[in-house]
Image (cartoon, rainbow, N blue to C red; front, side, top):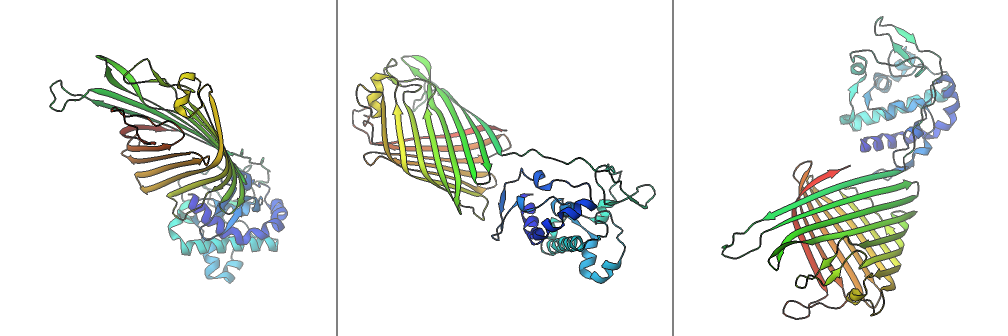
Length: 447
């Protein structure tokens, strides 16, 4: 429906210039004036049409003559007749439900004519958008519940007598719609995996259960040239394992991450932008061998970043592609560890709990709908203090099986050379690169 509205609105641009001239006179002839721009404020302030036309809904004044352009598309007989034989149509008596009565004002007649010409062009170029003919609309069974107080200036057919009766002259109250600048979204994913090995399995193995829950909450604000995007990501997963002959739970994924990005329109697809991001974890994690040795916990560590720069959000003709790239030449990065004994494991000097650096940052977010049921989402984060580098690459492939179930593959590669290199089980130093991946069957619920 958005494409239909955008196309019809682009056709109506040619008549927008006449709107201001006839608004007062039309209001006098049609007391039941509806505030159409206010009714449409839930739609974005501007729509970028594929042919390059860019307009604002504020350009359309309060005028009931525009109702044909914004209602579901109907094949109006008066518009077709006027295109085929305009001289005959001008002299003919209007006997139709939807065309308005003859206009005394020349500007009103010109405006009505241009609207009909716009409709004829749509009929010729996009006939598939037509929902029904005018006769079909008038033959809908039952009485249309339209009272005289709702609208005036339109001649209605009496369903019983079949004759023309004028509507009343009562002026209705203005129709007002509350403007909505906030857009919210929520998604929950639940994942479960179970595996079992008999004691004499020829390769050996460890029976275990694995669960993972994930919640994404978004609240985005948009008004004219200002945007504010907020996202909260929560992940927590466990798996069972055997330690010293006893079954115990260990975390396999744990994340609390909040991102807030403010944008101010600059030019084209570029926005001035300021972004804050902070993340930590829920639960404590202990060493696999020494169960009393703490490796990490809530706010140990906690990461924070504040970036200033330019955000690039291009608009593609292919609506299945969404891209955002934030370039931040000025970026403040910090980390905090609440436990002194493990602070040095995260690149903080001994005896301190806090460390900050200044540098540059790049954030990239890509979403590609490969097929109707297959979506690829990629998140890239690159930060450098010119002494050390931190890189995070997250990729998710989601295949939708049904409304509530999907098959998902997730992989996360991380590089951080500001921390100490860890040793493997043989005591050899490992590299700075880190990797994890999940292949799961998801239960999804969105609101």
